[in-house]
Length: 224
Image 1 (cartoon, rainbow, N blue to C red):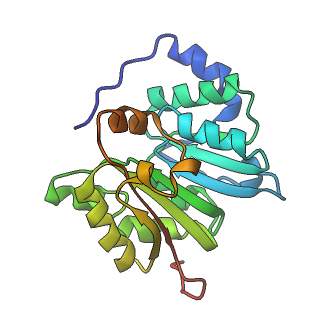
Image 2: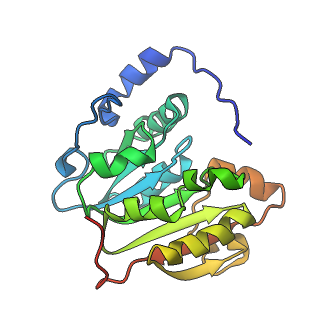
């Protein structure tokens, strides 16, 4: 189910106050972003697609000040809340980009990200919409262009059908899977887990969280 997003009061002035945290994006003429705009030369770079209100990415950035992060979210009034969190916390290692994931291979340098986070993406439950899922093999192959050798994709969802679908799609796209659990909060990976707003809400209602890591073999030829 798609949730209705409430319009934010004073949105323009609030976005202006956070303007230094946003990368520019023009859908009609998307311009590539150079990595130094996001990440100091010596820093590791990680990417989250679908950052929501930003609890996950801002907590991660706080814990890892030596790493640079880019948080992507397509809904402007939602990503604004994430940027405001980062501004309040005075984080200088996270930037934000408001766009659809399909633009990322055109905007970001190839092989730039050491880790990609996909947290609770839209399951698009109808079979005819399968290609819209972020974990469809075609989407994964596009996103793999952004992954550096040995990079890892971390995927979490409460939707068991999407999880089963995604396992098959990762494998079809050439990824290998590890650290798989169908009950994250009762697993060995729980202690290092950072919960998103959505995760905290739905796990509190008794939903189990599925989680896996996927990676491409270092000798695998990646798409150009």
